[in-house]
Structure formats: C-alpha cells, structure tokens
Length: 196
Image (cartoon, rainbow, N blue to C red):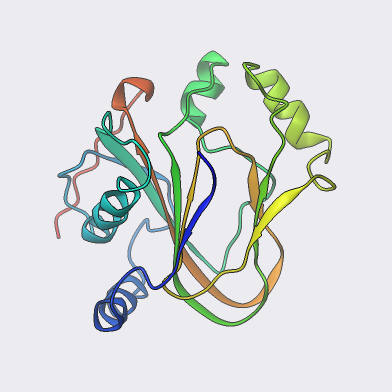
C-alpha cells in the first residue's frame, strides 16, 4: 500500500459542520483512546466516516475497533510508528493498526506543520529495541520522505509500519488521527463509553 491523499473529502456544507462541531474543546480529545465501532463519543460519526472512506482504498475487512485522538496545534515529539504502545511497553512486542488516517479539520496561517512520512523500512520484523534505536538516533531526519502539506478537508491514509512525524510550525493546525484495528492485535482494549 502506498500513501493515499484525498482532497475535498466532504462536501463544503458538511465540512463546515465538521469544523463547527470538532473545533469545540471536548474533554480528553487529545488522549489516544480505544473505541469499538459503535461506542458513543463526540467524534464517532467523523471517525467512522473516515474509516468508511479509507475502506474504499485499503482492505479493512478485519476492522473491529479503532483508536482516535486530536492534534490541536500540537505535534508528535519525534518520529514514530503507530502501534499498540501498551503492548510494546509491557511485552516488547509491536503490533500495528490496519492503516493510519490523518484528517485536517482546520488549517489557518500555517507555516511548517507538514506531515513527513519516511521510506525507512529498517524495522523489518524487529521489535521494540530496534524501534527505539531507529527513532532515537535521528537517522530518519535525512532520509527520503513523502511530505504532505496540511490543507482543510484533506485526508491522508498511510500503510501500517510507517515512520512519520510533523514538522515544527506556527499558525493553526487541527487534525484528527484515526487508526482502525483488528482488535485481536490490540492487547488491552480499554472500551470507552462516553455519553453524548
């Protein structure tokens, strides 16, 4: 699977409603949280819509849950691969989502903030130790990368096991990350039920 970039994902009227609702501060929005497909939470409809769209481009037949969080003018601190952090920390085993989705809800006066996606595949079948070595020695900073510029209503779908990061930026940048999972691969699904 290669990187997929989709623009104008939702019609303008729908996109304005997404912005209106998703830009309101909500509790625990920045926390990475696990959800079953029908778990109620403030971003459920958007997350499930993005998963449905991604399913037109990648095989999500084994999808049975997802994790989701927002980056509101924040960025990951370093290069990383989306994985089950809890399983990696407790067992030293790396498991991966079916794909990784980034959707840009709001971009304004942005300088920087590009999504960098590495072509580095040194991890191979390596585990936690190799993962920490690769991301800790800055070897990814000078490697060939795909560079995606944030844009309102843009969706990026990445394959699993891909190192990525976000460059430093000024301005405003709000994105939602959604990672569909085969729940069997997720060690301890914390089933979150939030009343809407």
